[in-house]
Length: 155
Image (cartoon, one colour):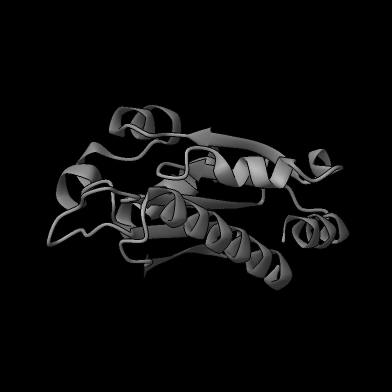
């Protein structure tokens, strides 16, 4: 999928950025595994802690306190922050519970995504289920790449 993303973004002259929490840089790695990715990938932010989210992306402490790190509200602020702190025109964010663990209200496998572009910010939550840490992270990475490709194609 990263090769298709490279081709589509290059054709439109778009730069991309990522803001990752539970995937720990996997989306950035998937993009940069493709030769020529420097033409479309500006930077990636790995913001695993709440402090990193506030310091690097400008996520509001009030948003974290009100909704928790795994929320569409935080995903939206992460994506907006990545766009604001980069030269990209499209940014994706990922925050979730890869496992093991979770809670009744935020179960393992819940991942929130954000896409920010000049058109605005959209968010969604995907319940991947308790697939195990590695599989949730890979599923989240693949989903984020798909969201980026869709956003590039819509641009």
